[in-house]
Amino acid sequence: MAEEQVSRIKKINATGAMKALMTEYFQELDRAGQDPGAKVAWCTSVGPAELLRSFGFYVYFPENHGAMLGSSRLAGDLIPAANAAGYSPDICSYLTSDIGSYLSRRTPLTPAFGMAGVPRPDLLVFNTNQCRDVKDWFGFYEREFGVPMVGIDTMRSIETVTANHLEGLIAQHKALIPTLEAVSGRKFDLDRLKAVVASSYRWGALIPTLEAVSGRKFDLDRLKAVVASSYRCTRLWKKVLRLAERRPSPITFFDGTIHMGPAVVLRGDPRAETYYETLIAELEARIAAGEGAVAGETYRFYWDGKMREHAELFAGHGVCVTASTYCNSWIFEALGDADPFAGMARAYTELFIVRGEKYKLDYLERMVRDYGIDGVVYHDAKTCPNNSNNRYGLPERLAAKLGLPYVVINGDLNDLRLYSEEQARTQFEALVEQLREAGQPS
Image (tube, rainbow, N blue to C red; front, top):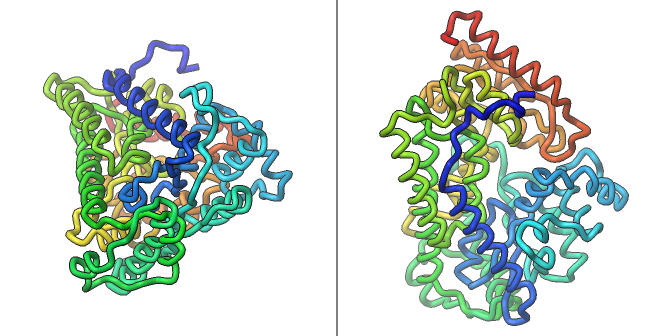
């Protein structure tokens, strides 16, 4: 196997700092979960984390836990427990892994970070911009823990994000405030908010609930500070990913899936900004020295989907997977909007996964050109249709437009019963061979 050979991938020194930061984050959550005076909110990965942090919540992301269950290879043991509780094997395997973990009382957070377990929530906050599954996922925990669940219902298959889309979403974000106040103990300052964002503010049905649960007063200045930090983080993360446009690329997609951790769970926290400044300095030093992440980089691939395996296999063929839909999904440039609510509403609606097929085709075309891509790998995740962009002819249309070879890998996020490593390996190698036969350099 390629994994037994000497690695052609250059290790990133900043990984140690990233692991230390993630350990710090999880241990803070652990302490908060055991402190009656601290408040923990569970949030979907592209939910309104900034609003929660502005109320002082410690924010935990179950999807991140789902990914850990997959990478630790625990998911296969845990999914059947969720299936037995009535959650279909055909729905999101992050969901079934996570619920299975809860039912089985097993989590990689304990051996990895010394946590007593998953921190108990005081509040559950979702955004359906990725899928409806997250709402049903959090609904399970609402019944289990008896805590409030509130959220944002986002429209899907949007081509152009219009003012009408944003108006409703802004109102939904603001409608969360009463519950946040009730849970956190901080009060919402309506007069101040009206003065600053009167043009876009509307009360929603959720506000009284948020206020009742948080018990904290809303502080617009604090929200602005958190959103501003999140915006700086997203700009730095974008810079990390854009450095991969250089030849040779100083970073691979597989590195990105690891180093995106702070952008996912610590956006709005200045520690994430500090980390990315460190990472950027290392990558820029690589560029200056002419060093690539993959020794002898020959081909450059784009990855669409969530699978994170086979880094060494690609590198063994001189392939650097330089760009991806997944890693770029945590770039939220709209957070720079002067109105934090408008910024959050737009940022969490402009996501690739929310958009229509025409937008997706145009986006992929830009990425292929920007990164000098030679081939595209699409991952068809059987339990994640919303993250599988191969099902409605998109690969064929992009190939016809750009003359770009591609391959579709059948697999899943966590359920390895749906994946054949040998078949995927054969497909990857066939894609490389196709490029060689086409006369591209090897």
